[in-house]
Image 1 (cartoon, helix red, strand yellow):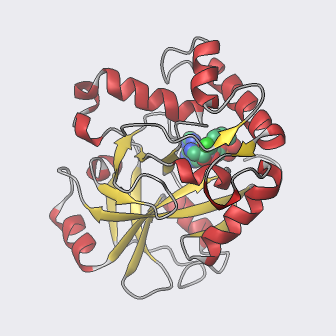
Image 2 (cartoon, rainbow, N blue to C red):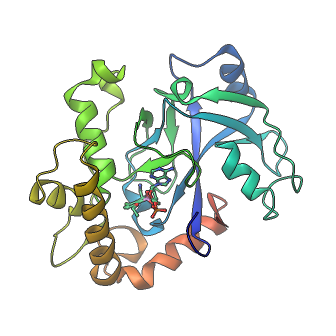
Length: 254
Ligand code: A2H
């Protein structure tokens, strides 16, 4: 664990329909209740550009109750346990899951996030998700996250290797931020500039992530939505608050 607390935004992504790998229990729960994937992000200002959502086929997730009757969120037990001490869950210090599922069960699910420009999205696999960070669920913003961009590219190259139906892949990237250094498609710029070939190029991806983050935050401008034209520094808390006030996200720290 690092020093101090990291302020995450947990974004609630609606599961509309399960994919081909879902168990009968998960299928039934999604039919009868509201089930959300809980994506942990540090970049709320990019959420207009979500095009899919990633889970890891190597991670087990819990489907946990929220404070609302008949509503559930999917995340790692570790994340939910953490939340259970932040007055976010029904009972402090209680983290019993309704269901425990492997990430594979979720892949191919049909999902949506009201703030995203893309109406119908799917769940895709990301092997580099770390079980001990965030919620274990990563919402995909290929315009501004080098990790997300290269992961989608890799799946596009060899969908059969990933067991992904090509129709689940996002069509176009949605451009949301502009910077003088990297233009309107920061992730693509950095992936090409640093010649990153695959999600396994760890060191280069760490550098790309660092460069993207700094430029996006300090010199970025929003180019979409209600804050079009505003600096990222100004718009970031506004977009975060809008999501929280709409009930589509909540803050938590870890
Ligand atoms: B970010 P930090 Cl547009 N494993 O959200 C791997 N990556 C994870 C994760 C996990 N368990 N949990 C969260 N993340 C990702 C948006 C975004 C993010 C953009 C650009 C950069 C970026 C859309 N994906 O992250 O190591 C999540 O992706 C780079 C900083 O704690 C989360 O924010 O800084 C970020 O990594 C948290 O990683």
